[in-house]
Image (cartoon, rainbow, N blue to C red):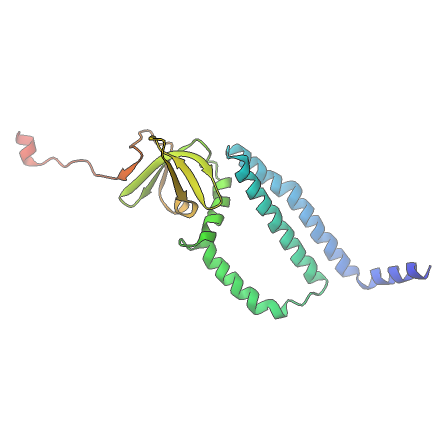
Length: 196
């Protein structure tokens, strides 16, 4: 019975740590039971390939588990002060990398945004306007770094996800211009053309 007293004494001395651990485990269960299934429904309605959906859900579960473990470690007194400078530097670099247009990580961020946006469903026809140029095609798949568009000529174009979010897009335009090319203004009628 001595071990039973030691366990009860340990529980009373670490009661707040155990409560915080329980709260964080409930948070993880709530995320995996409510938030991730909602993300799953959004992915299913987007008609994307199952491999893309599996990657997105896997990354969401890893993110939820990482946040939960970090808070549990903090509750048990893990000393993060030595990691403060390193974590601040990593967060700064990650923040720049997530949203900088030249970054590969920004494509991953854009991937999750595209997964939850119903306008970017598989089979929708997109016209991406990039300055004076354009490209058109059907969405065949959205991958981690790029979106695969199939043009009218059955050519496959891999377009970066972050550029799809930052460029003007026409979803299912009424008239199709062709696969890709330059946006040209309509010809101007001159006075000489009017006389002829």
